[in-house]
Amino acid sequence: MAMVTALLVLLACAGGVWLSLHQESLINSTNQQLSLPKTAKFVPKRASLSIHLLINPNSLEEIFTTILPTKNKATMRKVAAQLRDGIFAVAGLDFNNEIATWIGSENTFTILESQTEAEKVEWLIGLSSRDKDGAKQFLQRIWQTRSLAGANIESSNHRGIDLIYTNNPNLSSDSASFATALIDDDLILIGSNKEVLKYALDISQINDQNQFNDQKLNQDIKTLNTGIALIIGSPSMLHTWLGMPLKFTQRKDLNGIVAALKPQASKLSLEGLIRFNHALNNYIEESNYATSLLDDSNTVGNDVLLLRKPSLLISEKSDDPLSQLLGPEIKKKMILLNSTPLNTIFQSSKEVLILLYEPKEWVLGTQKDQPSLSKINEVLQKDNFLITNLLIDDQNIKVWSKLIVKTIKNDHSIDNELGIILSEEANHNWWSNNLHALQDRREPNLLLESSLEINELQKQNGDLLAEIFSLGANSAQELLERWTPWRLTQTVTGGAFKQHIHALDLGIGPDEDIDHSLLRLKANLRFVD
Image 1 (cartoon, rainbow, N blue to C red):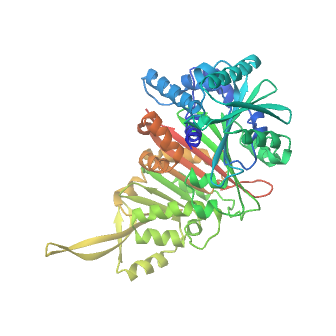
Image 2 (tube, helix red, strand yellow; image 1 turned 90 degrees about the vertical axis):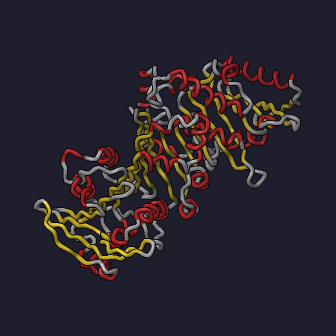
Image 3 (tube, rainbow, N blue to C red; image 1 turned 135 degrees about the vertical axis):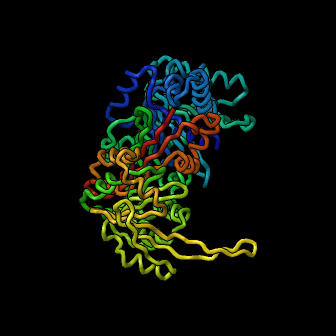
């Protein structure tokens, strides 16, 4: 399990890279078309998780100094070295003394389900070499070292490749079970045992069983354009490591995910494709209404939800994948906001809406007739809310409220409970639980920063991202804390990232692929000084 932990940390580590002291070479690498490395030929299509790192690990130490906007470069350089070296050390490898001088820029880290024992996790590492002699010398050194340490070393041949391995129960570490193979003098396979390497060599000869020759996977990767790493995961990985709902990850038609990490100034971007085995019900209609509503939301808020089919997303009966994926998170937000009128609007809205919210106040934008005022009024009247029409700053405002009795230590008082406020405008209806928040939205100089990021997400994919979340620092941290890779990275780095998180933007929607069997995912993790 230590290797599992290490690979999860690597996922977050690879995801933290965006600028380098060697900026020109790094920018050139991120601008290259993505493709699977040759190491992918030894990775099964159904591996639990594969991380194809397309940069040289030697770069991480210098690159890491720009991950956080801090003046303490020496500290960040130390953190990067510890993180990188620790990943290799879990496999029994000394990066600085054994690997640094020869390793190349096409490297793969894979977690596999055991072929022989249920619930046992095995691993495979594929390292490319820029120095053929270096790779050979590496193998000579590590086996000589282990021999001197008392390990019982054995060898065999499989498909014309020499395997060297040991299985010594007296060695109390993950390296107790360890196997290597040298391929064409420039690629080294390292596995948790010899059976893993034999399986890797077998599937490398069967095109329909390895990732490198997977035609659909390669087609998907081409649409992801550029990046520094590829992540390929099974449905089970989406739940166990990324916390996606079981109702979504246990769908029988779910195939898995492929994603690319791309560095940009002050943010890390991820673009991915979630593939299904048959066509999805693409419910997106061609409309500019979402952009129009977003452009009209000149307000200050920590978090933003831009949703096209809110009633579908929160429906308990829906078998739509987006409903299963996003519904639980949206319903959690609704519970926290604790507003019956807000719930009613969500349940009634079959068209796009935008919700901007802070911990104690929120603003909701809808179409003029979605939902109808008569329906909202009917629901509120059943709860004894009465409507009042007010004129404030030449703006007609509708307010639903009711009188309530408060009792504190046998003392009674009459108070006014606000249900919801409505401002009817030319193109949209704007609702809120706070008059100041509603008025702030009309200030043109308070353009929400998140709206710029959301518009950018939509521009990148032709306005196809059906559902969009833009989370401020607190909500972003709360969400990230549920992800195992992030928690491990925080532990290793002493929480170095947390204080620099500015926002997390997420967008997802059906993709315009020929088979209509893809969901496209985009995410930007933004950092601040």
